Image (tube, rainbow, N blue to C red; front, side):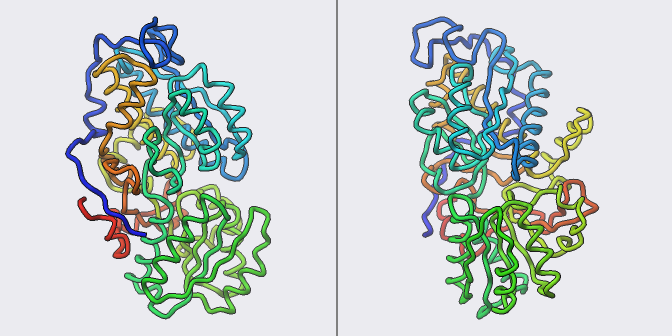
Length: 419
């Protein structure tokens, strides 16, 4: 499973990004192929740049998607107020809801494909893959709000963090390091089959086998009752539960396991926890039991980037609940900003030139908003560390950092060669 990463010198920093002056001479040509007027580039005028978002703005993943969108909006409002992008153009977002349905993603992309330069946010691997062929034909780049290894190796797609398998390798190693599980134990994994849950389970299985653990596999769906699964997990004597599901199922599992007296750690990736859970009657069953392993820091984390983001959020008057996905949307916008500015610095603002700049990005420093990213080898995850956080009802965003810096487990280290 492990593959090595090579390191290149080129780096683009979020800090320097906001300090870049307006770049004169940034023109546009038709559809990224050259030889036309500014009006012929989809999503670009002399005054504006239109970026699309395709997200699950309804359904069980909606709170996180809405937070991503709010974070991206905050970033671009700040950038626009500071002079815009590419010779003063203002960036605008066209948001569309695909309701976590691949066919709806195709429909919504078709509706905006002639009106946008690129896709700023794209929720879900299945949805990304559903539109990937048409996006490639259109020369449209994107930053998916998905961390599936299935998306690796695509130069026009920048995965903005660790992949789900790496998250769970680190999660197993963290519990071992902290003595919460030990060699010879058995652990259990509840997950949605497919590109989200499957890689997470495979990562945990890989780490379990490396460390003499037995792993019990439970495939579930959004309508699963979980009573049978929790009873089986208790009967097997599992010392930890891992989950790659939606937030409602996390709450259900926490309630049922607490009722059964199964007070073991529950470990999840970013999409499985949402602060909205802490407003319900079962919040007490999440506190101090649930650990979130994520490429994104907690809102309350201590870093330069988070301090600046919290200040900007406070000044904005935004009412969207700040959380990890808010950070993710903001960070994704900074990555797109960097690519846009590089495109205008090096030539015309076209789809083809923007795609070329996506390919040229080798690394990106996030100032502690998330783990730093390496794109020197697109076939491997862009990051191999994760923040570990515990659920905390008193914390804004519902999480408190347990590890002040990203944790890199021993079993991920073979992936670190050359970094």
